[in-house]
Image 1 (spheres, rainbow, N blue to C red):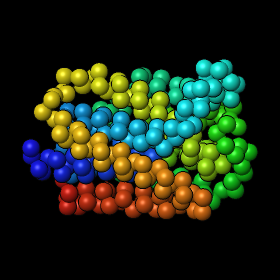
Image 2 (image 1 turned 180 degrees about the horizontal axis):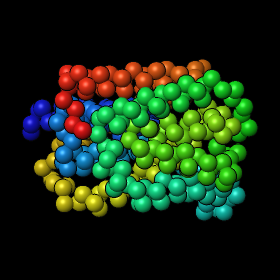
Image 3 (image 1 turned 120 degrees about the vertical axis):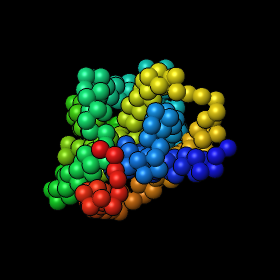
Image 4 (image 1 turned 90 degrees about the vertical axis):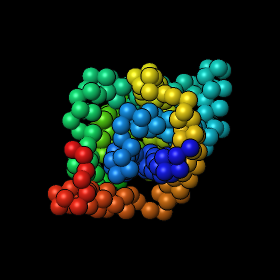
Length: 274
């Protein structure tokens, strides 16, 4: 097996796992890192599908007790379980509908390092603005949410169709604007990732089915393991972090990272693909 290719797989797996559930945009990071590693062709796209699914599994494992409770509640027709499931479905719809309508156009024009860098910077300033506002909490946990709250979160998530925006960032910061506690906004973002990313994965698998080859099993496995472990660490770490801190550090990271990409691009130091 090509050791260099295997190393690239592990690096991208770690990048996916660490950034998928933090408000820093996993898609943006994968575009940029994939560009640097020259691993952004159709083969790279298929690889991203696999490691994204591994990150989803990490969230499922972390919240396995909650998911089992919801499944049992649905079978027993418990109102709380039904409401939670309905909220996830409602929140999933905006991105699904808009993605089908505008996904191709967005990928054709915005999936490149410079547009991603601009989205990083803009998103960073929005987070700073959100943190400077007075945060009034009216919803303390995901079980207190109603369908209107879920719809608002879904509309916020739809902003993540713009690469570099961050799906988790849009939902978490959107949740703060909508009166959710930090933990409720963060956990609902995690739960919403399960149907959203699973459906996106299935769609991409069908789309790129001809690109799956048995010879790539080794890099798929290496990248998936790296993605699962790093995503598990990121999810637990973020929940601990927000219990004592706000999201300002992620805002400054986004702004700094975006400025570096723009500076290296326009100076010619790095030949980003555009």
